[in-house]
Length: 145
Image 1: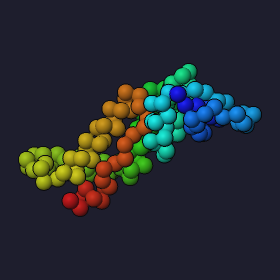
Image 2 (image 1 turned 135 degrees about the vertical axis):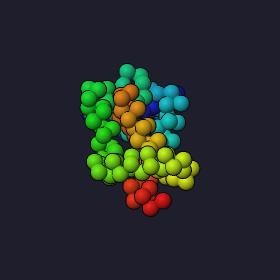
Image 3 (image 1 turned 90 degrees about the vertical axis):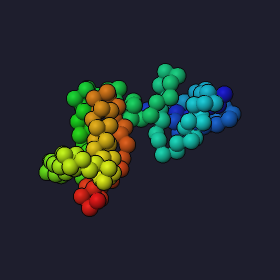
Image 4 (image 1 turned 90 degrees about the horizontal axis):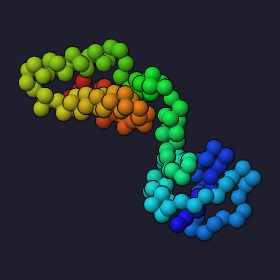
C-alpha cells in the first residue's frame, strides 16, 4: 500500500511510502495500491487523477465529459496537428490507391504505416478514446519515399 497526495482537481502530485502528514489545505491524501503507484511512477510524462478509487489519465477524465462529436473532432484535430489536412490527405489517398493498383504497397512502407495510423486514430475517436499515438511519419517523409 502506498499514499498519493492529490491536488484540488484530484490530480496526483506525488507518491509516498508513508502517509504524508503536512500537505497543503487544498490537498488530500489517499491510499493507493502498489500497482497503481508503479503505474504512476513508470509514466512521469502522463498526468494521472484518482477518482472513486480508480486511477485514470487526465485525458480519460476529460473524455468522460465529452460528447461523441467532440471525441471525433479531437481525432480530426490530432490528424490536423500532424500536418495532414485537406489537400495533403487527398494526395496521400491518391498515392495509396495508385500504389495499390500497381500492386506495389510493399515498396511504400511509410505510406502504409501512415494510412494504418489514420485508421487507428479514426477508430479510437469513434470508440471514444481521445489520447492518440503520434504519426509514424510526416507527409514529406511519405512523399519522399
